[in-house]
Length: 320
Length: 320
Image (cartoon, rainbow over all chains, first blue to last red; front, top):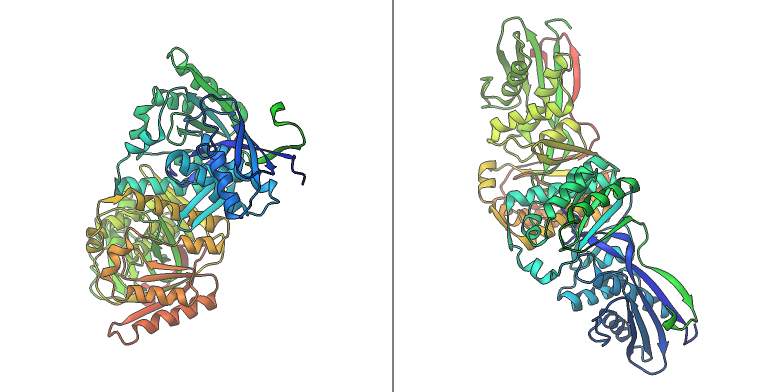
């Protein structure tokens, strides 16, 4: 590999929690997503020379998640040369779609490729989690793992990390509606109670087990009726304008289920076909049409693949 | 069908909770189990003419679960003829092995056969739950459903009842050690806290999802490391002498996992082969060898089938 060669990786947005799988379940989307470019430099240290697609993100490599992830990887390998990196944000920040996770996953993957793949996928999850720790203060894996692995991913445990790729046993399409309001993950987490009623816990894990059975036994109806959250959604949905109307509209339009994506404010709905997901998109958009709140919507198959190389070239990064 | 024809049904013992699936997961054993005999009588009403294998169970049909289950079925069908029933207990009561569930399941199945199968399996679960309600005060389904359906069964929800048969996607063998101490389900339930820490809830549903993935994706190692319960086992195990030693011995002997069966005092362990399950049995028995507490042990494949007809004959019931 030549020194001036750029590696360009794309990592997709992700939906974490998925109603009944709070903190343990997530899945990948096809788009939106982020790109990270990386190439070796002779001088040591990491420089971020461009950030496209968004304003206001720091290019300080100790502040931007792509720099944080890359730095940890280089340090652990005792590598003395440096890196030049660029970030191309293709998705909104603070949307509940795993924005920092997508950047972190793309960075971990790009740097690993650049260095000749010294790390396993499991290790890349751990490195990408360093980005999450920087972004949100907690090194969770339920966004970075599906962004790296694609499909549905279970994070069974953290000590030690136990990431279980579930793939996409049955065709699923996701509709996302992102209301462009500001909602800090820290606020959305801070309103959660630290104790839950046993009865609601039982309902929640019954639904998660039902979701797993629906997914792995290819039973759309079971999957759909398991997409239920009676612990967190009631608390968090008050922070999302029109949430209940959007959810009801999605279900009425034929979605299998719907809920808050991650900690919000994005709302996701799962459908069995692309046509259904598009009808759901229309129904969800309609609810917000005269709300005065701008929205972005995305329709995406849940893909088997997560992060991937987009291009491996000698092009100058400025032509991205 | 002639009036004097007897239907004889066998329903197996079951293990509920299965560490991480409190109140929602159960599986069937091959043995031990109960038999229920039933035949039509011209005079109305239900009479229980014999109870074998155990002392002290009431033969009053309004008190014994087999009478309660049968009465509800006859009433719902507006049937005016009566039933003669016999119960052959093949398993201990109050053992945590779903003793009342096995009797209830056998009764529901036998009566349904006798009447020409008017009820679906789903309905039989509901009738057998009437027996559970009589026995324990709460109409739970996590024992009766696997006793009726065989294999692993998920009870996703109760309103309405959503029973999901999971089958036995991979060979599993269960070792049971039943320490013959008295432990009331009501006591074992009463010591449980009605609020649980969110953090432990997340661990629990992560493990249940891991168990589902291990079972349905045929991954013994994942299934094994998901057999963990940090909410209920610490509270309930104090009621079971030598619990931690038995569990440790089972794991050291090669079991995939072990825990409390139902609300105890029986301890179950799952293994991948029969030889392993037998080695586990030996190790578990050894712990109790000089304890002064009598034990019974059982080794059983987890079978695909639950309740079944044993015999359909014109024999007199006394010859059971």
